[in-house]
Length: 330
Image 1 (cartoon, rainbow, N blue to C red):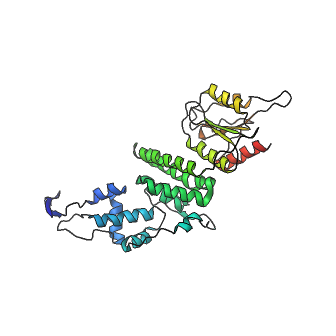
Image 2: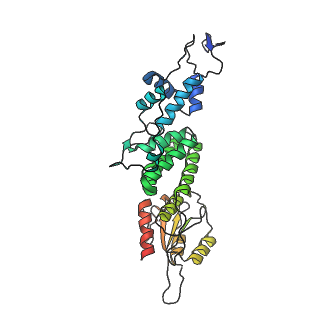
Image 3: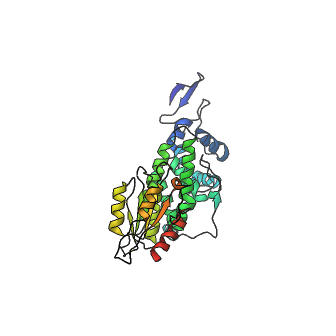
């Protein structure tokens, strides 16, 4: 034991290696008020009390809090998570249950419990948000994998991943440049999960390929990655070119592949270009008398207000997949 002076000038006995509430909160990636709330509501405070006013958390105390974080990251209610954390019970489902998830009768909804304004969303969003805020890579990978396996790529993206990404973006915008690392961290792990769960790219079929690319100066590739994975899931061949593809390279790719559809992503109105989309849609190939043109999908919020007849602007992932399938089957 060693004696220290706290801010009030009082002697405070602090066991070697013990942490303050603020230090514990930073280690867990939660707010100090959350740690105090778990102590007050669920009895997850330090087992050993010191002579001073301030809480001191030993290794065993921190282990219980880490368990609490891991359980709530799965979407479990805090009261139940606290009960299991205190009992030391392992609440993870058996491997067989994870491998063959049972779909609920309807979407299970939940309110925000992660410090982000999630609103009325699937309960999985809370777990993903908490893991992202804590920068907990293993938990985040597990949650994303289980969500995609349980619901499929389209539903997982539309009802879990995208609402969480939007909530992180709102938190960033209202926090003065804080939480940028959370958005990058979450986006990176989502990209990895898509690659792990997408089937191999389908072999080319004449007139069935889809070309996906960001317009010049645009680098938001994640929505295109999920569309590529969803198309691969349906056995449709895809050629993905990623961020900021120069105009000349885009035209060359379209001419070389002869695609049924071309998806052009623009996040911002400053990068969206109606003349570019019209130019790509006018490209032709094939023998005289049977020449073909691609269906050009204008994807992303940057195209809002720039819709043109013959250039579909799908409202979401599911509609984009249906539009590509229609183009392939025409």
